[in-house]
Image 1 (cartoon, chains in turn yellow, blue):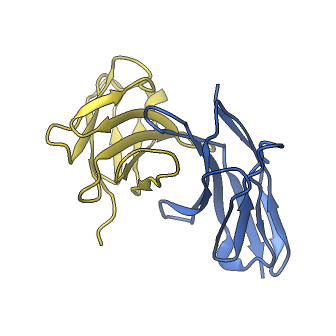
Image 2: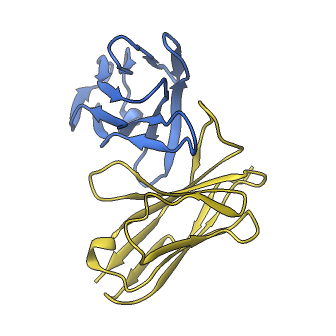
Length: 115
Length: 113
């Protein structure tokens, strides 16, 4: 079956611009996570949705970052006034629910480059 | 707080050599533990997992045992292949609320023919 998909695969933007990154989770998965992976590092948690609501946004670095999931499926991560330090691979993951031991399925990521 | 520490890479081995990648963790409660693999040009894939102490996860010849007493989850494989060349990430799932993952920094493995 179809896995998690993310678009675009690559995004190059200029400092100060606004970007949107999209995630299509596996059909039927209620939980959705966004992570950010900087070069040479492991992914770091940004935000978690259970259904339509952001249940935990404690990983968002500042108020320039925002994410939505209006219908409980597709999610969009939005970054305002991008900075060079925002350059990273943004990963989306989904799972059929939450609980100890439940596997998260990752998308291929969006590589964001801020010039 | 929760954290995962992995041995630094890169690790370079000859084909058929024995592999160990060390992973230790700090966590509140009893987390679930995972190994994910990232092949060149691909996304993160689950390799194996263990959900409680003394559980052994295994897949594709790789194994890891959840050791509560040493807070470790070392990855092992008896005979590596060139196709195992990838970056390996150890992760834990927090024990309540979001069950978000905390990842280590990753260990790059290169297997030479």
